[in-house]
Image (cartoon, rainbow, N blue to C red; front, side, top):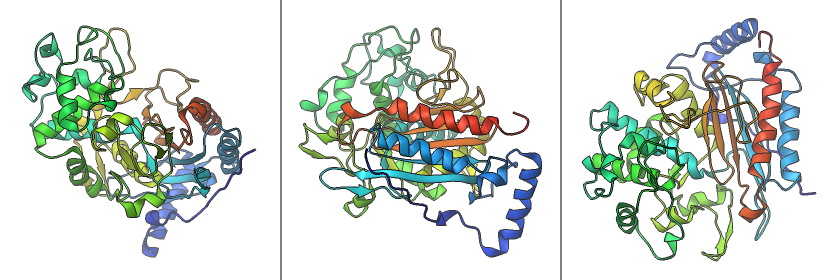
Length: 415
């Protein structure tokens, strides 16, 4: 059995000044009386609270702890960290297992930084394009060639930006391109000559390539690298100071390790796991973002607030609604712009109570699911691919955690 470790450190960024405690306790009392998350204004920040304060059972923390510890002990993941957000309150936050097992053991901590993998697609690429749309610089229904003229011919003129975000562009995925391509220019050239696998708009094919191209669109329109645009327009306004591409050397000790990579000949820690994103220089539309559970909680609360957090507006409220609306795809009705709508209870990737729940997952073991009806957020971060992707059991980890969480939430009166 693997060793497990749990760190219950104070979630310092979320403490309110003492002068605000009376108001905080009053709102908590109101939440208890209604047994439902209080309505959050755009100026309220996240705070800590016990599960019992929102009507969850006293066994909530123990039950979720055991689920995460069990996943670590069974070998489903090297380590796992979770945050549960209820209204504007953090009602659960803990981490178990190791940030690194090879070449030495380093325990996870509650402020570890994770390679988010495909969560990059929604937190950076989708959000950046929606911001550009808000500014009148982007029309989702214009062909990609409007912004990248070299993406043309052989049916590519029918690929719109919206189709990139809904995985209906007809683009598939690149196989082993990282072995002989290096740099963003080489990747864009390769994408622009890649044949479509199907007619645009007909079927959904989940495509890293489409999101790579979406990232290039954002860069062309903004005139900035994707990481710089996201930092200035998303991360800095929200105070997400532990969210970035290409972590600096000084930050890498906080990063959960991913794979012992045969291609690169080392354990990846603080370097992007995805081979294509690595070959592109570490910044790409489909992968490359690193972040913490704390920062993702802020991002999720911003979406639940309709695009604003702590008085900082990132997206228009109407834009958030459009982004999270299921798109008219002939063979798949659970795809919004970038984000997935949960398909059914019991799916392997995780779920929450409301059928309006939306979210995304990442190859390294990460996931973010947001229930707008019940104002509940489940953030699950893991380094399941450490030390090898072939040992990872991400679905087991996610399903187990969300099953327990949903049973706890269903126990609330009125559910």
